Amino acid sequence: MNSEHKRDNSILFNLITLLTFGLTLFLIIFLKHGKGKKTEHLSKRESANEGRVKNSVQEQTEEKEEPQKERSVLEGLNVRQKKILAEIKSRGIMEPSEIYELVPKVSTRTVRRDMDKLVEAGLVLQRGATKSTQYIYKN
Image (cartoon, rainbow, N blue to C red):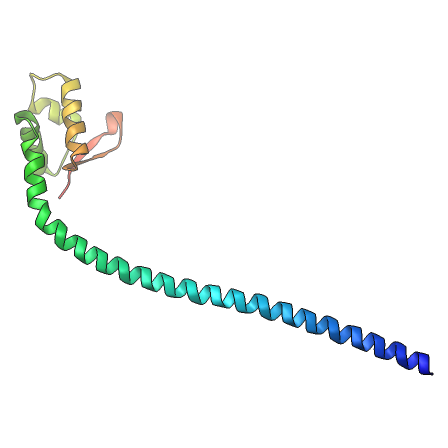
């Protein structure tokens, strides 16, 4: 009877040890996971707040620089590019064929280079490619 009692105590001891180990492991993982979420949540909130402050400051700076920047970009354009830009601005959107008609004595390759310069300067957006290309005035 004594050996049977020892065996029962041994099994019970092993069972309690395993349950304690499992519970401890579970709590460690759960707490680490919970802290990670909380930290991630706070860092997202802090990032959003920083982003708002940066955007606000950036917008104020851009508002002051925009007219100067636009003037300097426009000064870098030739007469033909200014003419094309003015027409796109008035229409809102143009296709290459319409632009070619606007400057008939200029090769199509030159017009494409002019349009590339306007797109690179950020004054015009290019949508599509080849025959489906459209140029949109960027406000």
